[in-house]
Length: 188
Image (tube, one colour):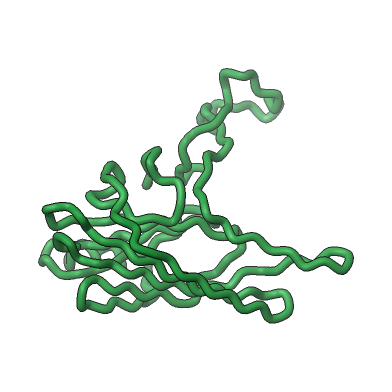
């Protein structure tokens, strides 16, 4: 269960894992094409490991809750990694083996419907990482108006602070000490 640090606030690459610091963000480029009630998005973001060490990074990106990733490609230095869909446990096993062998590797996971994360192994010092992500999302239509949103920040979510097993079915009115804001987690 991945819990993200307080430093993550937007689509970014953290070097050194979740407790690490943000990689140098060199630039972003986005393209959008709308066909009827579907928007096709392509986002390319470039980062650099400006530390003096080889690092593992975690790329995090907020998305529309109904978005579906259609393609993902990562350039780490000269290496190009294209995403393949695999069973979750098998994918983690392949990633961990590649990381342990010192190979460039990436693992994409959906942490909740509106956020993905990608672990990136063995980024060398001063190496550039380019993340290219394509996805589709719905365009809303209401009384002659089309609208859509493109999330750019990861915000706190309202979650219960009390484990679900301790909440009685008739205890729907929660006191101020029982609920509140917390960092995003998979338990939301």
